[in-house]
Length: 236
Image (cartoon, rainbow, N blue to C red; front, top):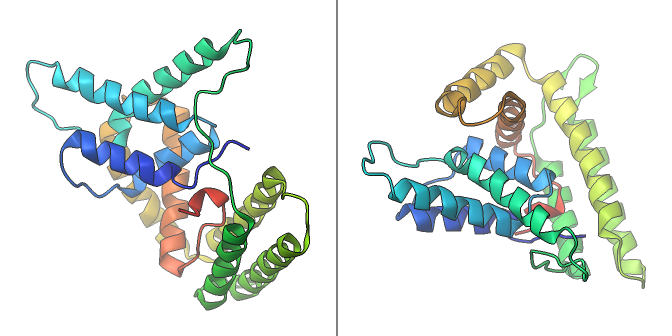
């Protein structure tokens, strides 16, 4: 499994270096990074795309607007990913264009148990027929079970299988949060997403805008209720 402990932080830090100063990465930016991660875009392609976007910007005779978000780099990142894919076609060694970093079992176990504890203290919402607390407790129990299984097995863990299970657990939590959160709060979050995405609508396809709106709402819900991300990509 090609993966990174620091996929998110590498991108954030590289973007800040190229911009020439600290800038807090927004919820929209984190959503975009997650889309790239889910699409399997290599870290190297993202970093190349950021460099290309800034290089192109710096060649402009007039710089009336600053690059204030990763969305300005989205087209360049996709182009870099396509270039890397084409360069890999026909490679006799099946050359990979990124460096994968392995996962230590002890680190995975600690990550799972930390998230289990955080879920037990999270203030998940309750609604008629929907119990956030019960769902959090069941998810925490499952995470502890996965951790115990990893500790007891001698063979190297199949990270793809673990990640699939974590994805299913996270999707169930999102469904609970969406169902139990008052409609007016969800509407407000979507309005905030629309405002933040407004400057980038011409720079990204509609499908990506729709994904970012969804990611924005998910991230706001997690922040609102103190729910951790479960994917191994968030181990950094």
